[in-house]
Length: 422
Length: 157
Image (cartoon, rainbow over all chains, first blue to last red; front, side, top):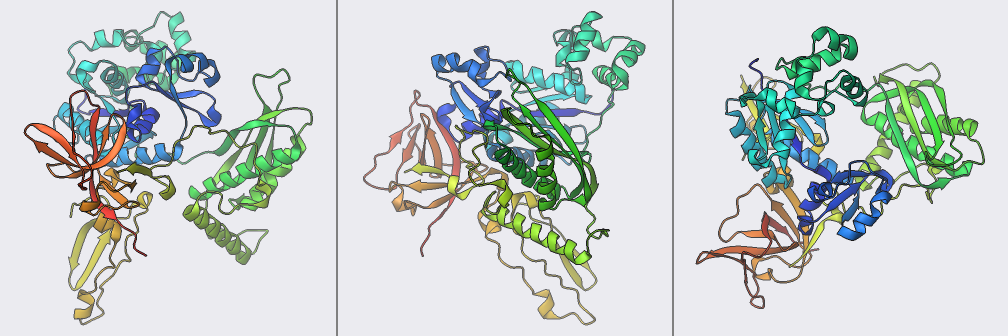
């Protein structure tokens, strides 16, 4: 085994944990958090997991259980979760020179570059994060990232490890891998699982000892890397610079079904505003847009349609994007359907080098547009999203997604602070 | 001052010039003061070397940004400690509470702000107002100290 030591840090039931920090009454009761539009379960407390409710199940299917066991249900509060995530990562960053933030609640860290016993360091990080943010974390330590993910699962599920498990110290790694289902191995998805099961590989140990030639042929070089990682040979490194995005999207489901073109255009215009903002944040320009509208999956008359628009010039100027997207929707809209979801994906992205020369616009006009967008973004940033909008977005917005049970943004909005009665 | 990612990381001294580097962490929206560069042109001026940076309230009030939270309070039970109804409190979870610290605590799921005291082996939450009796923390209570109150900000005008 190599000298590298990777740690995967992951927050336990992250969204639920965030809600519990600001409401201690939720500590030992069943809690779940729902996705955008209060659709599916995206986070469950241990009590909810114990009731057998799976991840991703539509919320309405849980209603009987919710009533019977008094499950507390919340809508996602991404503003809160995002801020809490930043806090967790910042606490970790105090201790380590490099951190790869893998998702909102997971990070990879190299432990071998730090002169401290790995398990001790893990315990210290756990204690520090819990004290500073109230979020419990689990830490899996291993010679490779893939094994660190395995170790993390064990740290989380087997309480005797107190939240930190170093698989490189285990004398019986193969026994551990035998208990680990192959579909839970990082990088093995549902399709590969089926293929592997057909070839009598059902646990991680079997995958570890599978023949290289077979793996490369059936799971590509990426799969081979996973297998090598299971064997303790690191093939993946800490990625500190995230790869630049190939596309930026804004897609949402509607809170209520939309049948009229006027309302649909309002929604699309709203999404265009959000998308243009994202483009500016990433300092990118879009050369084309992919616009789609669709009915619900669960309806008798399903309809999905899309259109790709080539923009006249690479842009992140909101009015350009609104116009292009709304024109597209007009072309693909078909009356008689109840639309439930829509989206715009900006593709063919390029970096926004401010001194680009535009064939169809003077430099002065370009500057004016740039300054206008800067002002709009600054106002929205200061006073909250939606302070300054575009007429096309509409004012009633009945199609907005439901967030019936969202808690307050306790850490990011002055008006949303906790009020404690003395 | 604790050297965190948000504070001064290095002061370089090169010949007669003094450059102070501030590391800016934009995700925290902590507005760092304008950089004051003392780059002498020829003869070093005393005025240049004594140029200060502008004063930053964030730096003064927040020692551990990742562990700092704000809450508002209502009620009069802590009036003798200078905490008035409507005040904004700055809470630091990184500080270890000690006997006599004013803390945000949770008893049986409800938040409160009190002074914590250790007396004769028992923990008490004490108010700063003679009309309020101390609360003794017992085994059957769901009790936790959430964070230490470092500042109370009272709006005057």
